[in-house]
Image (tube, rainbow, N blue to C red; front, side, top):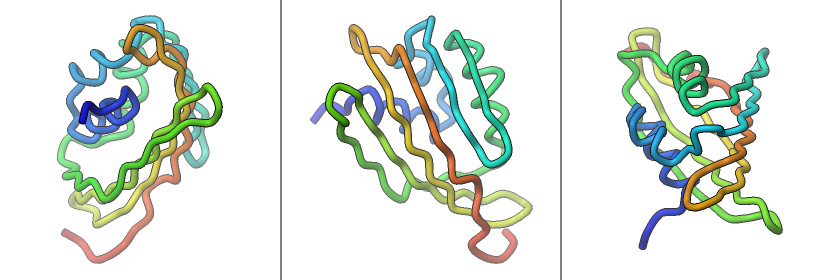
Length: 124
């Protein structure tokens, strides 16, 4: 089964595969996202990757995908993904839900809500 655009986005983001993220985004993607304490915006795929997504992840973070689900709300697509990550400061779980529109197999509009990292255990 071929993954939809949202599932491909989630897989690429969690793999820190920036070329894969770029491949699923329209170059003129309209992005707005909310993390605890901050609202993020970007108007291009390069800005989204360089000024938002790369700031959300640390180079030494190790990710494990816990769950991915997708569906739609009338004409808008949805993908939700929960993941565990570890780094020198500890173990965390985070969940993000994204609503998006597509055209020609690429995400053109992306709205994302993030739970923020939630500490789960001891230090690595």
